[in-house]
Amino acid sequence: MLRSCGDLSCPTPVYPLLLPSGVIQLGVSMDTLLNQWLWRHEYWLPPGITWEDMKETEDFQYPRPRDLLFGVPCAFLLTALRFVFERFVALPLSRKMGVREKYKRKPSVKPVLEEFYSRKGKHPSEIEVRYLSAECKMQIRQVEHWFRCRRNQDRPSVTKKFCEASWRFTMYLISFLTGFVVLINKPWFWDQQEFWTDYPYQPLEISLYIYYMLQLGFYSSMLLTLAFDIKRKDLKEQIVHHFATIFLITFSYCANYIRAGTLVMLLHDAADYFLELAKMCNYSKWKRTCIALFIIFALVFSITRLFLLPTRVIYSTYYSSMLIFEPFFGYYFFNSLLMTLQILHFFWAYMILRMICRFIFTGTVDNDVRSDVEESEGSGEENCTKSEMETKTGSCNSNNNTVSRKTQDNGVGKINNGHSKTS
Image (cartoon, rainbow, N blue to C red):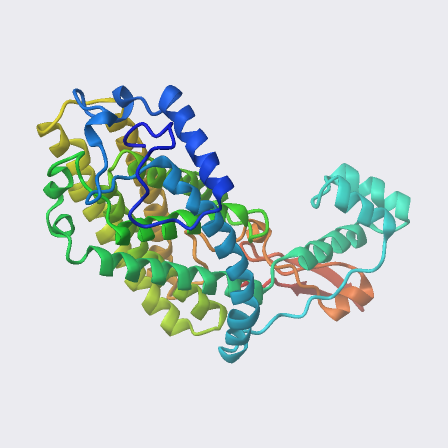
């Protein structure tokens, strides 16, 4: 909050938030608590400036922490909208684009193995396999085969991955277009020195507030659905990224770093929708379109996050701001969040570079190593053939490793080779 609002005499915002009275009273109580313990001007404002210096008038409205409460219903609204979108828009779209599911043969009913799978783990050790083999009166290969096929049943379907990518593509595109329309005529879009013109006495515009709530609601909804989404290899990095982004949105709004915050959000959205669209094409087996979109994504990602963000935005927030005021806690906190995001950008750039190298040497782009290779696919797709089910010798396909086994058929050795799976 940019001034004390512990009493009820605070001027009514120029744009009402249409929140229930109980929520507004909760916001007032939160304002009082934050002013006493957290939002001390010594922490968040440059030296010599207090919240009282930024009193609101009928013509000027400044950001207040309680305004962010509107992000909570936005998050739940977007979460509900996502399920409707995936059911009635993304699912029919996946069929029209030719998304097909691979047949997954169900393993035989084995209560002992099922109980072990549910309670103790999906990958039993060699000793545990031997124990289960003796208890179920099955061969070791039969037990291994059962677990491989059972894991196959839990793998996310291609349709589910397509629907998730469709939702993220839609939201990233809407966020980017919204931010572009809002910022295209703003002076700080072209000159980042304008971040600090008249700071912190920069009035809040309704268009900027709407843009902030859209971003805050979207990233909050992504955290709400994280437990139900497909688990990916960079899950930990994604969690750190979402939390850092939410903290960045929240702090930049409350401390009136809105000019820098809006440009950071725009630069992030510029590349993401290309990636999600490339995933959709990959799931639909549109390989050439997928490769073209991925190349565009890599170029936009490099320009926006590896060049413009550090050289324009972070340079301005870290160096140019010090030409106007002395360092303070909020300055260090804001730049720490930006640097956290930048470190994640270098991590993802490394993964993208690996994928580009794979394309150069192999001529194909099988998986999105940045974020679309699910954690469960580390051991590869494990589809089992009918003959394997009949003989119960158990051999399953692998994504990362070619699995070869020799079996005897009338004295003649045969080799069953795995085939790589595209996500």
